[in-house]
Image (tube, rainbow, N blue to C red; front, side, top):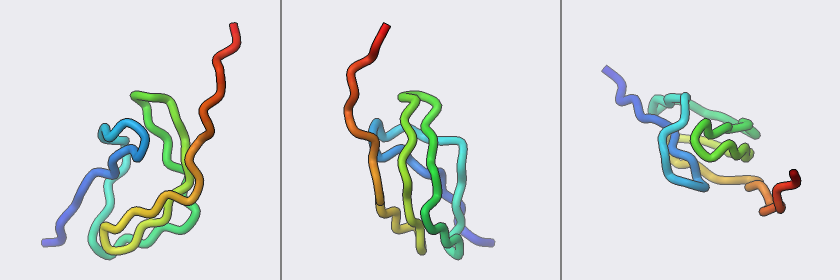
Length: 62
C-alpha cells in the first residue's frame, strides 16, 4: 500500500484539503489553505513540495 500524506500550507503550516501519494506529480498546482485563506502555486514530486509563487503581503481594505 502506498503512503499518503496531507499537503501542508507553506504559509501557516496547517493541513490543506489535499492529499498526495509518493507517485503524485503536480506542476503549477494552485494550493488553497482554508485556515489562512491564502493561495500559492506549488510543484510536487515524491513528497517534495516546492513553492513557485507565494502571495505577497497586502493590507486588508475595509
